Image 1 (cartoon, rainbow, N blue to C red):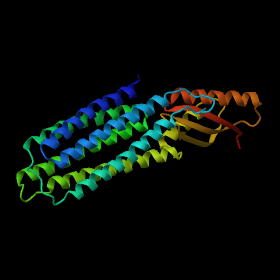
Image 2: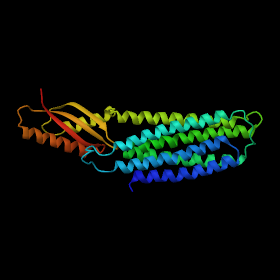
Image 3: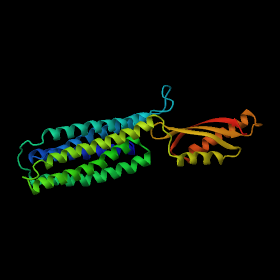
Image 4: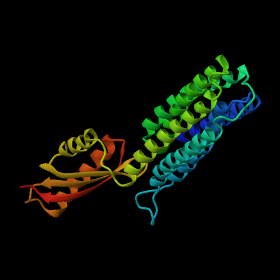
Length: 286
């Protein structure tokens, strides 16, 4: 099991425990906000499961039908997490609005404790997944990190709603349900953000210009290279595939030009760990 898979499994275990804790305390303590936050944590278990599945399939080597590897499965997993979050948040908000104005038993004061535990746990999980997601350049793991980061905001919102309901039950009778509604909206926002970012990768959006300059510098450092005319890159999972138009002396033989192109490919792949492979097209320098 690689690092990304271990992080995903850790997220599943922690989120599963938090979901059971919040749903149990929320039901016995009559808090819609705490139950909503618990359901959101339950969704995190499935989200981390998607991440684990995506990372496992993405690790498969290239084959005849998938010469660029299976990395796009990992990006697709991130998109599925975003859509799943948006759908789950919509259901949470809709359910909370339906219950507005309905009488309910008074909240138990102990419902605040699972929210405090969840807040601390999700801060730790979010940091862990962001750290390894950026290190591994995993769209799915970063999507899951955003999910956990939003959970900290939803826990704070639920805490505020529960606090108002406990402080003045008569005046803030529906505060707990409004808290559940806000939790749902936050989850929808996070899902939309994750879906947008992963969709941009799936339609081959170019990486940051700073990364492309790294490719150009590495290519130009090879002897015999006169310039780089075109340079494109697309993400195919955890890393990028680069297409490069290289300018060389027009009087060189085909073999000499080929050797320079080979050296450029080797140089870029060796120097830039975020590049999976390079396709070099040789052109005569003007």
